[in-house]
Image (tube, rainbow, N blue to C red; front, side, top):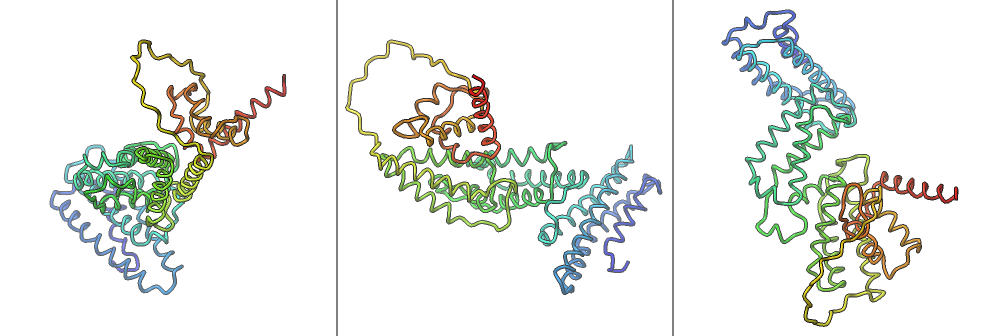
Length: 404
């Protein structure tokens, strides 16, 4: 075999030797199967070395990109054929099953090698075909399972936001039919995330910092998930609770803002390419929260210590609030209340008072008891979809009024 096409030997093995339509592969002896397995393990290293040598000798970036993409598409095509051959076998001897398993592992390692070493030459928005996706998810699940053994999984699960990350990753590996197209960008990102989790080093004083080791990794990889952002902002708000006054809260927020800005970020990485960067969203959130608290200080809306009064025994049951159900989500309601306050349609001492007064009397189809503080906070990081739905709801009201 010449080095002009290093995949020739594996290609022939899959398309001819292990092709059930051309050969009776079940007649392969145990020794022959063992020889194929040994050969495949050596072949992985040999092909990787040849690809490195070929790309090193090329003079232009365009030539390297063309070569890498040729290898990438060829290996994926060969993988499809290997899956098809395996599916044609009804009853397969255990030795032959080992051959196919080793073969698919070899192809998976070659793909991972190209993705890790030559990622910038691959098209990230290209859709992943179904067979390669099965192979990738299987390899990713193996990495996750090993990660659980590698780290103290019980401790890791208790560390925000590890529970969310592992849940999302396992859901991806276990889902058979995805509702969206999986691109190579998504695969690259998840592999990089798992690789980062392997490299985490946990400090003994981890709990003293609002940003955990996992947070720092997610900030580095621009993990711009709305759920994660909600959890992160709520943790920051909770961390402000021990503060005695608003001035101390502002100082603490400035400290957290500085700590966030100082975190490293990997260029070109983003979980969701169709949404804002994590940095942009959090920068806006910090600025708005600090500005809001500064306004409270400016207007002297500071809680004064209450006089000590002996508590009277509560002889009556707490009054049940009759709530009004709104057919919107918490985020959409928050946008409308914030807009009404800033437009001075609802007039109160502060926006906080608007939310604190009205929200306890509201519920949604998804939640009975709403947090006024969480709703106000979320109104600063609303998604475009929530804005559109809130606008549509207001337009319905306008149309109703026009018809009166």
